[in-house]
Image (cartoon, rainbow, N blue to C red; front, side, top):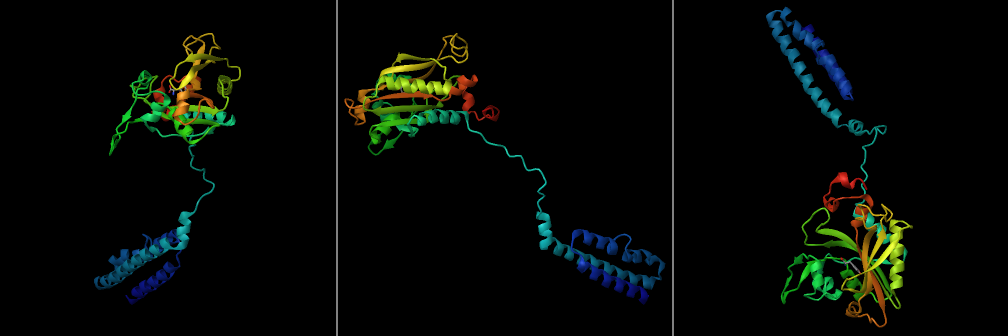
Length: 348
Ligand code: DAH
């Protein structure tokens, strides 16, 4: 019997020695199979106990079991040791540089942003600078200073979103700007002529939305003030702009229009780039597409900004931004621009 016990002790000793030398999960597993697996010596001894007389069976069994339990405990200790060893941590953190990378979706600019950039780039190349103004605006800048005093009928053309602004001295009328023209006033108050500016930005209208109306859209405003600026400067600048944006062979049409802040006021159209002027769905069978409003800045507007209209003159213009991609790409619903539908946005 003591032979058996000695054998087990010897085995246990050897197993412990080898356990200490294991360095990886694989080596540990091989060790487990060898010393604690179904075909290991200890398990064999336990299995053959039935062949021993009862007294021996008890002693050997107890001894072998203790050895098995002891080795199992040591194995889990060694496992913890291996798992936390620097080598294993490095092994797990290893990067396979041959694996294909995660595909990275490229973002793109919103069609409105792209168009604003395109418009501004053309004017910047002509010597204009870019200026921005606030979207929440005083009534004074949006209407009053633009020659639209209270009760002026032209105010009806701008469905206005009013903002209550209460001060200690009472309410001061504020609104969401209905056009970018107030930036003209803010700029002329600060920068004395000569000045050439383009002002892109969002504008707001209190409007029920449908395929051709949005309550928020974008405009680009522009103006130039200096001595001796004439209608010829307006025409030359804006025709050149229209041709750079829509193609050098475009014809431009120049007609009278009315805006309170300019005198005279004009509307500029290009011949339809779809039908070449014959008349089609895009141009509503007129052959012409209106692209912007403009005019010579009204003397009252200049005077209100502290600029003497006897000495200086200027021209101004304003255009809707979304209208340009709508025309170019045949987009049939302006609401698509701000619906955040990636299927739409990804096409640009
Ligand atoms: N602000 C006008 C609008 O929203 C557009 C406009 C017309 C701007 C004529 C101008 C201009 O500067 O001269 O309808």
